[in-house]
Image (cartoon, rainbow, N blue to C red; front, side):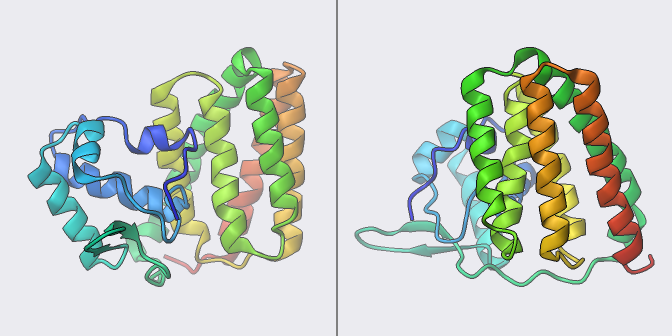
Length: 240
């Protein structure tokens, strides 16, 4: 499976600017794998190309790749057609930690702020072609209501795609971080088709409001969408 040219991958492989380049590289690639932006079986770009894209030394990259290999998220092969690949299957998710459970409301607050900003700017800036791509994601999710493992990465792409319509790289990065935090949480709760259907109906309504440039309506739907997730988390996550 070759690397997808999805626009959101531009954020994954944009230059690392943190002073702790190793930790940020592990975080960046690990989050992309967790969100499904780098799906199981995906081949990473060659080391030289990755170093250039991320703006880091080869030794730093190799340390990060080694850490992700030891954690079970990546594996490497040699010879023709070899390289570094995302593991298939990925390592099983671990039970939520007390720390994670203790800060879930903060993660929801962060997501609310980011999503509000993204949808408000999307109502001003989104191009028809971008909205058409988001509509395709909504249609795809309609076919994945019985398969949460496939639904969630598409859901993530929809929300990151909304941020991408704003043209703000920082907002896209913030949305990616927010989605990563939410994935850490919602992976520990059930996902019946009825809940996924309701969620995707809201996606469609958000998209319609953005297409109409109706920011007030879009923000109201986003609020309902996110508060619904909070209610599910409050009811189904174990106590911290």
